[in-house]
Image (tube, rainbow, N blue to C red; front, side):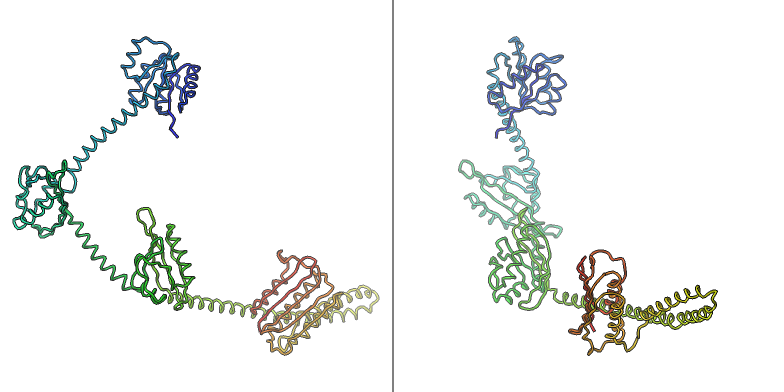
Length: 606
């Protein structure tokens, strides 16, 4: 799409400005308009709108086209300026054209305005292009002269007879190999050539005069003992199809030669380095063809595939497993996208091994042309890490077992304390209460206190019974525990004091179980039965103890009101069960939901 013409209209009449715009749009000119109505808005538009052309009325309040033209020529000399006005004298029109206006159009003859705008813009563009071209030529000549005099290369021009016609400043710097220390125009080139080389130099001149270009490098021993290298190029100067002379270019390449020699040295050292390591190094192009590789890579490929991968052959060829080809392609494509990364790969062919592989994009400018790859065998490191992890796991397991052992010791201590408390309640407190009851009975024979004492004796009987019940719960045998009978007693008590129907399955009679574990199983079942009696409102409950694969399976199940297992529980009964089971490396699974009863499954290894 052709760019629009940015037209600045300087006009104080909004009506005339609108007519002007409508007319130009109607003539299919692609225009963008900006209106200025006085000097202030005109100056602002010049700075901000940057018009391609100015259409100016002559007379504005405290401002006119002559001032507007002067400002435009001062600030932006190249902007076309056309005066569009009502009536002016021919003398004024001629004067403003002399002052720099490009044209003037009368408002009642706007038909000529589109052509005038196009013509002025084309003329201005043509003048601008001509000026730019002339400026470029001048600048080019200046640049060429600056380059010729300041380049690092020496230039010398001679005619067919080898007479010096021109040279630059740098050319004189290359006379260190000759007794003559300064070039002069009109002097023979052979004055600067060592006697032993004049014959061969004449042969070179003859070949160049026969339209052949010659290039060679020469080394020179300097007075300070250093070696200097000069690159010489001799080319024929051809004018009108004839060889008119010869141009000799001399360039000091001493540093380049040193760098080349150092690179060659480094290249040889690097080659020796990369081919005397067990690490694999290789590179591929975007078509998955091998670019470079070291001996270690070639060796492993031959061992794996039974063949040698030659340079520029496919790196994903047969011999590699499908899995190897797939992950290799995936990693190469990641690298081609510009990503640097390192991966750990396990391979079980031709032997069980681990590798740390790094991938790097190869750039040519901004374009990725391939991938550089580095692989290191870390099998021993991985084995060491695995051993370390196993050791850490073993130590952690030992710590956990020690903690569980401590937990079991605490539980056993608590059981002893419970037994002690129960025995104290039964043997001491209860006996004291019985003594009190006896004395009260004697005192109750007195009719005066008989009624009061009778009530006190009833309370004592109730307390004594409660203590006996509590003692029976607290006191359990710590040795030679009969687990089956103890659990049956718990179920019998639950059935006596409630309407709950109970069932019991016990298949552990042939097992040898420690008293500590028996006591904990008893407490676990006792805890859950208490929970059922207090909260479940159940009609039936069942307890099952089975053995399978060195694991005791305990199930306590009821048909009560159940609960949401995901909600936080207020009591500590379930937590006590979990802690006891955990201390013996067991696990607890609780299944329950509102209205669906509860099932507690416990697995304890023995």
